[in-house]
Length: 116
Image (cartoon, rainbow, N blue to C red; front, side, top):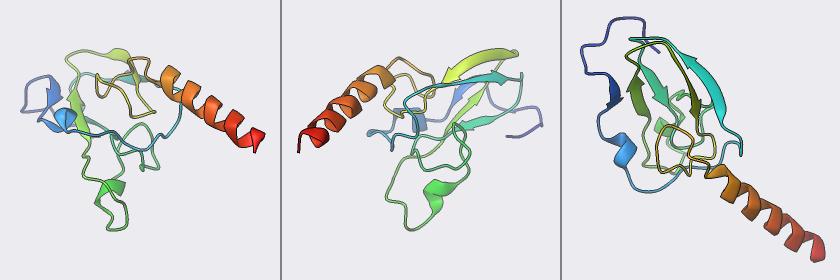
C-alpha cells in the first residue's frame, strides 16, 4: 500500500492477473474493502499472505511453492469492493462467486471423510 500518486493508469496494473493457475484457498468468504483513490493495492493471488486479502510478500519465500504474483490495482475514485479470498476467481482480484463452488467441494469432502 503506497500513499504517493501513481504514475500508472488506473485499474489493474501489469499482467499478473492473467497468470495461469489459482492460489491456496485462504477463506471461502470474500472480504469487503474500502479502497482510496490513487493508492496502490496489491491483492494476494497465492493465498499464503498473512494479511489477506492483500499481499505481504509471502510468495517470495523459498519454501512457498508458487509462481503466482500479487495483482496490483489503483482505484480512480474511493470505492468499496469485494476482494476474493478463495483465490479461484476468474475476475482477479475481485470476487466472482467462485467461493460457492469451493464451499460445496469442501462440504462434500467433509461428508466423504465422515463416512470413512
